[in-house]
Image (cartoon, rainbow, N blue to C red; front, side):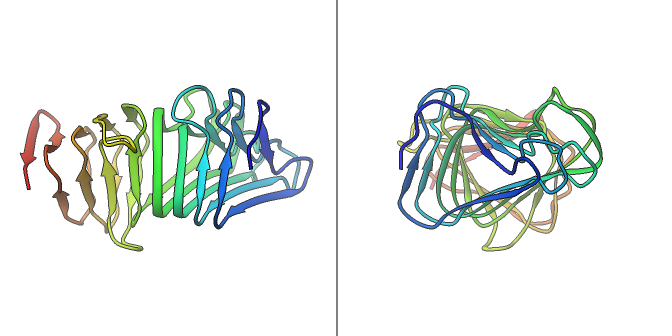
Length: 231
């Protein structure tokens, strides 16, 4: 399907909204097509986007971000993005919509397969949030690429479901775009870096798995130190 301008809302007015893409193509790349998972704070409002296959395209530039728990500010409010297959392209993934969140509200991102291309907005907790929103970003098995260079300050948990997460410092065409992760990377998994750009790790990381550099021109920078491997 193809959508024109207009925000896309899942989970509103006390109802749960779920969109699952298993195959085919959804194209919401026209300007003004932000995704708002859990739109309001009414009890029962919950928005979930599942990408299991196919192509979900919000474009790699512009303002068509995915807001995970846009407005579920009450204690039971939760929004969820799950990617286990296919390809998702978005200018950014933001946890929270800038509201005043009550303790217990959550924003959850699970990437266990497929490919996610992120633009300049990166994967971040919305800096406009107030109150107490609990963010959860769990990554493993899939690939997170760079439609444009992006930076994240969010903490991420590296798991092992489907293997280690791959960070691809390039866009879908292979052009180099750097990725900077300044949050804490924890968990039992590791990471793989591919692409011709630079993956920079700026946090005090505690993850237990291996760090693998794979591909011609691939590079990882850890703090002020860097390493590069050509294979």
